[in-house]
Length: 137
Image (cartoon, rainbow, N blue to C red; front, side, top):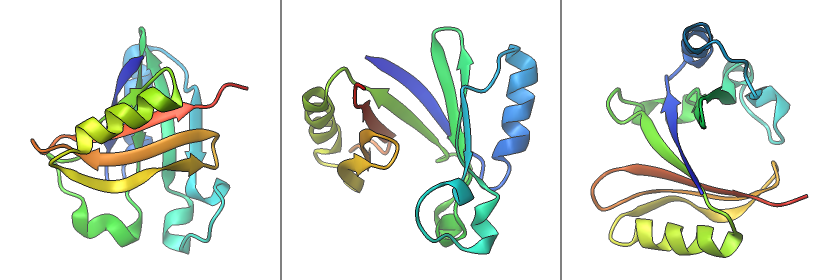
């Protein structure tokens, strides 16, 4: 299992991650804009970063921009999540249920277009979690 930090910069993810890339000297393992994902996104979101991943040692620094429809919820200080990558779908479900107990599910676990079982929650202490089990190919 892996635990990775996930950062959200409102609308500055690309600039921030280019900076981190120069600091850590690694290359992006993934960078995807909203326009590349299935779904109908407003023009104001299409060029925003939906997901970026930058290997740093044995971990991966991840991030995304905030869609316009969610900008009212964006606030510095709550823009960090912990991204958990369990070893199985069953482990992902168990951990998600335990983490969300007494807290709030913000996105229920479900199959996603990138080939993963994914969900988001805020635990009872206010920590934001993302649980992502990627199906084996």
